[in-house]
Length: 82
Image 1 (spheres, helix red, strand yellow):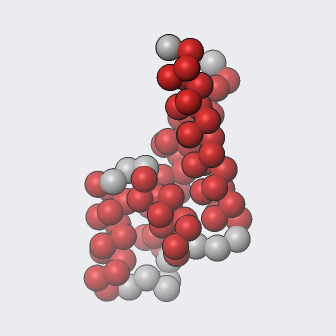
Image 2 (cartoon, one colour):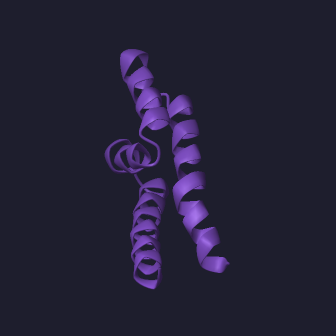
């Protein structure tokens, strides 16, 4: 049950936070902001990792790296067990 919660955290919570950060980011404006918001909605959760690595820095980028590693590790684990 604990690994499933990590999987949900990596695949649901992080992209939602990325979406909210894109909306509130003052450095994004106009067409760029609209493009990121559409990408974050349509390419959920892959675009959230791209957003974290390309537009953000610091703690949020680190969370993106941890989310990506967690997702890959849990996917490999579930494929191996199942």
